[in-house]
Image (cartoon, rainbow over all chains, first blue to last red; front, top):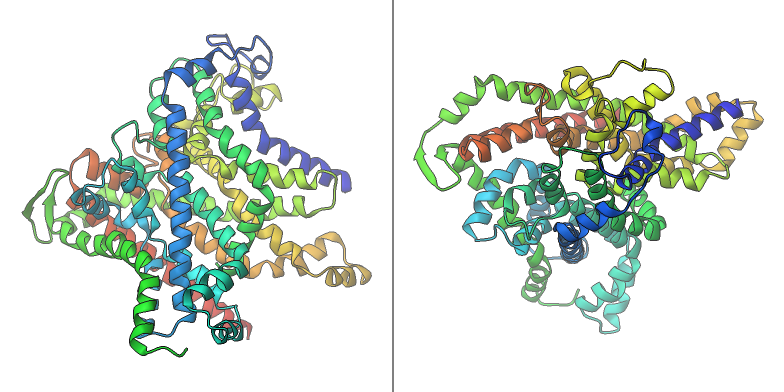
Length: 268
Length: 297
């Protein structure tokens, strides 16, 4: 029984990693080789020539930078904006609080995909098409982030806030010195999920960007691929190059990412 | 808080402002603007002319729209149960003490960080006949005779299977982690007590582990249904909606109507149909969760 379990586990593990290994192996094959069986992929001759060709002859590095830059800005700003809003909804008394809360809550029911057509029109009217601002700003409106952070902030005892106030601390100090440090895991979790979401965002860049200097990876890759119909090597080089940075990040931050994902399940 | 009411209100508003401004301009306002668009012939260049309820009438009689909705629904039906089973199975593997435990966790989650474009193109090439990974693997282990090829992406049923497999591979990581952490939350004492009572592994799984996963399963199911219904990019890259538009999901149709056929007004109308469907799905889910909760009491 134990052996069956182990073998099934091993097969599952191999099946999960196999496509990536295959991608890597195909990417270092020489172009134009005759492939008959699976073994042919996994045997030399190997060559890195296509890597040089893609790196110097295409805008792939440029697009990778754009993807990182956009994801980075979106992540920082989303978390900051959502933390501020979540803090107000959780801890500050003010008029129309209930109205505000329901306004944010109703945003959960509006899927981005359902407003993408009018969003295009709005962004066009504002002159945001084909710009970094256009890629970043519309992505910052995340009611989910506000509500998740609010529910974490709700867990901070009010006594703690009052003691800071007695010491003469203002609202800003409560926010930056109590709320944010105490909820660091929640903020990190939110940041990680936002980053991955932005990294994968396809529909909006696809509609709003036509200048290929501003492409993000999900847009740039299809553009390149449509030119390569001959062989598997170039597409897999593109895939590999586009994946290396995010895989390196994953290896470095794996513990935090896994923690972030599991934390999102608690309040989600 | 000892502040004047006015000052407190102003301060709260100041904190809310950055989020609220973006939210209103880029979510609430488009939502309202979109309603206007549905009553017009509206192109990529400009608003053309008022057409009343024409777009709606056209939509309700448009076979393509209902076919696309059905394709999105098929994708939900295919991916949701398989996702749950696979995520639980992988979590069971990675929850078991072994030297490879950590490695399994990394390997199962790794595909989830890939860009959607990378995952899709990898899928496209993996399922090619002749040199693709899947067919050559099937040849190698003898499941497929050497002279035969499976044309995954030119036949409707096989296309759906390929799309489902790629999507599961690419996205199961998140749900796998959610299940894994839920399993790790089960107190060891409970398991040990059950073992002392002579419970086998399978009894332990069915009577203790699985019931414990109930709440997180509800959450995952709901999120999965909604996100599967919004599928677009994998299908767009891998099958292009084909063969013969037989796998084209609703979002692809909205995109093509708006940006290829230059008809934003009609595309906006379809978006509202999508919105209503997603709203109904959320409401249904909410109602079911609450009803089940009531039964348990």
